Image (cartoon, rainbow, N blue to C red):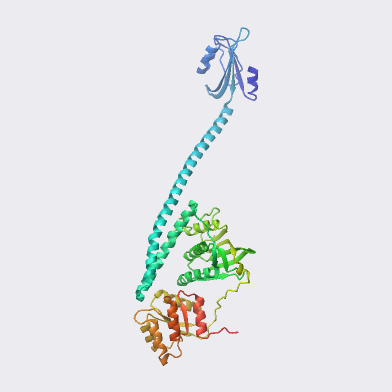
Length: 506
């Protein structure tokens, strides 16, 4: 039995101490610590007192494990085997030094305990975070839904007011209120959509839509903003891109407007280029690539860049909810698309994404090329009068003409002011807003058209209200051209070239 036990302790230092039945030490090999033969076994260490009971019974052995022995300067963790002796054999004990072995076990056990405690706390933390996230999403979904009801009601009332017989100033005020409410509605919609996505209740829908029309609407919305900020905004669509698509129109608009809006916010000079190209096509299945590149402030790109909800990429004091890019990434994922980006501080950013669509059968034919606006250099300067009571509209037109070059400009705030200025200065072209206080555009145009002093003056009418009725009145007054607000740079210069008969030199 003892031999089998000893075999399990190979390569372990062993000390043997033999003693008589009274406990007096007979021999010791002192391999672990010195033992004086003048002492008893019970004097070596208090634990050895238990051996007195054991040796009362002959020919038995006992094993004691993990015994801490502090003898003089020696400190060890030992396993001890005690043999009680027999008629022919004195009692003895074997001390096995297992210090390293038990220290390793202790370290492993401690590591396991620490890992268990750490995992326990981490699991508790994750459970709490998930509970908080679930509560947040439910709360946001609930409050967003509740907010949308009164917002929709206000927008509906504003539409009803538009049909009333309002003055021009009242219509302008109504337009401002409507724009602010629409912005609030979009913001609430973003929060609602994000909460639905994270709560797993968001669905992608498909319907037929015209991509050209979608992009044109976005361009019109942002053109004025970019002009006022003196930033060039370019939209480039490859002729290979089909126009008639089947997909989620609203989500495409949401993705593009968020990205373009992000570029607008963080670009203070230079330009923003929005490109659409064909990434893949097989039969009706197409994948389009959308790219938005700006020359803005950029941001520091890290290896684990994530667009988290309600978190901005910049520390600059720029208004925004921090929702845009988070929603973009989630929507692209839901639509089975891909998303990538690159950015350098003070140099700009580029966001690229691909989205799958289905092209309608009738659009399989060769798509007509999108007519691109080509600027014509003007050698001779033209005198232009801008007549509009809205300062923003004045500024937009002025910036367009200044950036183009070839024009002298004056501003009039209403029809009376325009006539007074036209009597003093000969204008080649007048941009006339039709709805203004005091004397509106119709009255001013009628006066100019019936006065022989203005025979050489061309008039382009501008309107954003009852477009059909205004067009008919414009034809009656025989204006040279008619432009609907909101207009694009292409609309303005196409009209100028046509009315003033400016042609590109061959």
